[in-house]
Image 1 (spheres, rainbow, N blue to C red):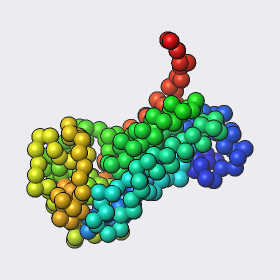
Image 2 (image 1 turned 135 degrees about the vertical axis):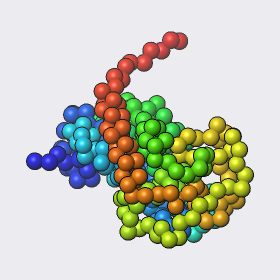
Image 3 (image 1 turned 30 degrees about the horizontal axis):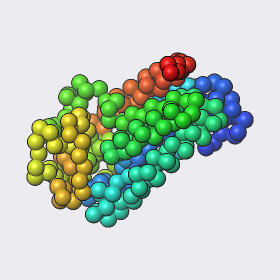
Image 4 (image 1 turned 90 degrees about the horizontal axis):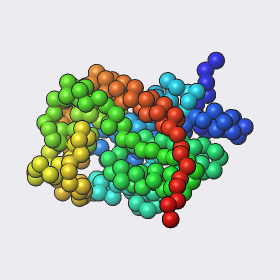
Length: 266
């Protein structure tokens, strides 16, 4: 008999039992925004959700899968049709409230799996607020950070830096594997910013040392950033499997992490 793991399918007594078993709620957070002329608006939700789902499926006794958050902060993409932008404070409050609700019911270890680059500072704040304002601890991880670096070095063909940034070799590869029916590869083309340096660049393999984000249309003609023409479904499969395997480890480590008592040194 398979173990139920989708949060929304539980009854309230089953949630109480999940709390007693120290299962870790895993919340995927993406966004609805343009991803060039070749990828769908749901790309960031789909990638984060699938990484999270596949990891939870492997260890359902230890975790459970929350319904994903679809909307987030992305005002910088609004020059391209389709993007739905949520104010930063609204987004932080919304995710924080989800975590605080879980903590209220007794969950003590919560994990946010991020699928959108510009979510990182906001989800970091939300995770910190959940941890500081409840008895639970909450961590956040972008799925691309979980891919083994050696695998990226082996498979990557796009230029560094910038070839893996947005609707790029990496994201397009995952979509080709997960939902190839939504990918229009005939419309994919490389698109790199006219200004690049050692300090100002965008790449999912490694973040630039300078934190900076301006309106996307100032440096991208198509809404793409990187080289999606290097993407393949096979790369997507291998990238995904690596991220899932490491997310399983993250869940297991978070579940086993001791929540030690605070010490007030006043």
